[in-house]
Every structure is written in structure tokens, then in C-alpha cells.
Image (cartoon, rainbow, N blue to C red; front, side):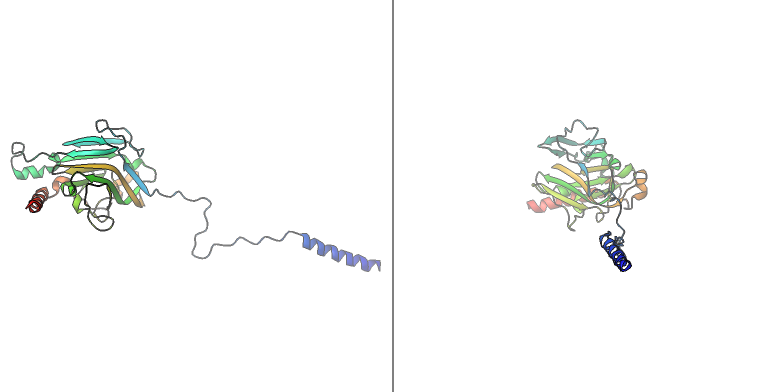
Length: 268
């Protein structure tokens, strides 16, 4: 009897121990097929945009060594331009000279040297030094004009590393929505599709040139929507856009004549 009781007690103790023992942990679930395994630490995302300049409190007479984006400003161009800070924006009074027969032996020579006589505002900013810099799809310019229609008098001029040259008449640029820019008397953001406009997705030299007198204000310039990372040590190797040439290579005479004809039709 004692043996039978001892056996029952032993079985009871075993069952009690099994009930109190911690449950075995289920193995960690594996990631579903086709999905990447979770990373121990998230990779740092590329910035969505890169500020070029916002011109806040900028004195045009004194170029700062470092811009508001933290990159050095190596050069600032002010040729045939009167500029001032106007309420935090940069006011550019573009004054390209009219044809001077004494300076050029012929009208052909005058237009051949158009990039020399045009009004020119521009900066050379060390964008390559910015963290996570990449080739971008868009360039956004917050701008307004004095009378409206200044896009017909301007050229956007980019020349990365001063080795590849891109110049497009401002009115021929392609916007994000597929249209073309129109500068008005009201502030607006013009988002230029650099890829559709045949321009590189980043530069260290950006200029606005005027081949006719005009006045405009700039408040901010940004590059945005990175498409691919850039190797700052091999910038030219990453440039895929075909060069369009320098501003003087464009048909400036045609632009001037077409604008003059447009004005005559408007006044007539």
C-alpha cells in the first residue's frame, strides 16, 4: 500500500512540475519570402532637397564666405547689374548695354561675345561639400518681376566645375507640370524639371543672365528630389546631360528680335 501511495505521489509531483515549468519560446518568425530582413539600424536617408541660397540679410556689396546652406561661396558675379537687399530678397536691376558699334567691329561680333556684354548675376557655391549631395530632378526658384514677362529676357546658365556648360533661355525651360515658366509681378515658385530641360541635376556655378534690361527679385533657390547619389570626387564622371554650350552660343539675336516683334505687336 505504501509503495502504491509513493508511486501516485511521484506521478503527481511530475505533473505539478510540468505545469509550473516556463513554456518553451516559439522560434522568431522569419521574414516573408521576397521581403528584406529587418536591419539592425536604419540607413541614413538622402536629404529630400538642397538649399542653394535664401539671400536673407544679404549685402550684395559683401560676399559671405559661407552661405546659409553651410557651403562656402567661392565667387559672386555682378556684371552690368545693380543689386540691393529688398525686404530679405535680392533685387537685381539687370542692365545689359545696347549695341555699341565702337566696341565691336560688326553686329555678328557683338552677338558672338554675348556672354561678355550681358547682365550677369551668379554664384559659385561648393555644393559638393554638402552631406548626402545627389543629382536632383528639380530646381525651384522663388521669383517675381517688375513688369512680368522677364522670362523672355533671361538665360539660365549652369557650368559645373567650370568644365561642362549648359545655357537655356529661361522661357524655354520645362516646368514640373510640363509647361514653361512665366515670371509675374507676384511672388511664385517656379519648379524647373532639370531632366526635361536638358540640364544637369546639380552644379557649383549658377547664373542668371539678361540680354535685355529687366528687374527681378530672388528670394530662394533649391535643388530637390534626388535621383542618384553623387561622388564629389568624380563629379564630371557622373554628368550625363549633353552640353548645350555657353550663353554666347545661343541665338541671342533671334531672341532679341523676337522680343522686339512681340512688343511691337502688343503696342500695336
